[in-house]
Length: 321
Image (cartoon, rainbow, N blue to C red; front, top):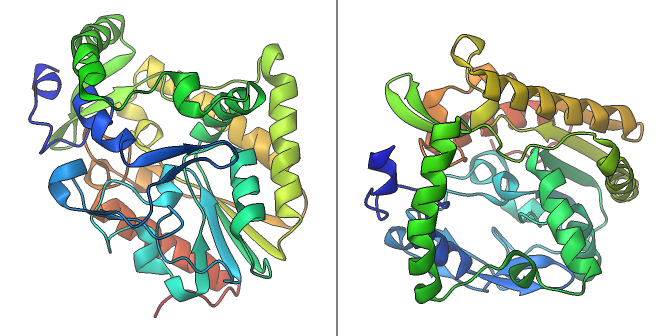
């Protein structure tokens, strides 16, 4: 644990660390309708975030083919994160001249509004990467939108260095308490030490969230009806890819919550939407960053292979050879 808290932030990708978070937040600008977008035309070297990153003139990732027939949506896994340019899954699986990547880690409604404002294609195919964080993220962005606030104001996000330095000791104390209480786990998985958060985007169908969950499903379904083909793929993530034999009670409970929301999604999504749940245990310690939630190079490569097979099977002939 101490190795993580005091690690060289130039070498360890960990965006919970305020010293790294300031660099990440500084690449983003709030947008009332779209939630957040990148500053346009960024071209960052690896020493800024720990990986190279480029953005287009729209403040999104990939090509700016707003008239493409095929669209990618989802949160940060769909957007592409934590690996160098050219190594994200969509770089490996898709012909980017045929796709518009509109994915950002924002609420479902924000993604819909972004498409309404920017997309000019015929809505032939939508590939939606389902990550369990979509519910919690949507909760935050929905509250910000209703209060007529930006997400930066709503969450209290700061990008000035003084604020981040003040947060650093608080982060260390908070992370230490989470380790003591067991919600933060530092353990060996395979040949590496990993960090797991047993509360990572936890969301359940409590009575207080019933109305909200139904509203978000209605937005999902309204979006899906506008496309001829919709493929939804549940992405394997670190916290629920740990083998059962190595899973703690906290991680087991977290996985149960993820499964509950995925089942809720599948039970309430409109007909003709193809839903795929990949084998999470196929994604091992070799496919994730130890202290970041995202796939590394190998994880992106494996997901690209699995997605490409799904698209070919669905006769969506848009994958690269």
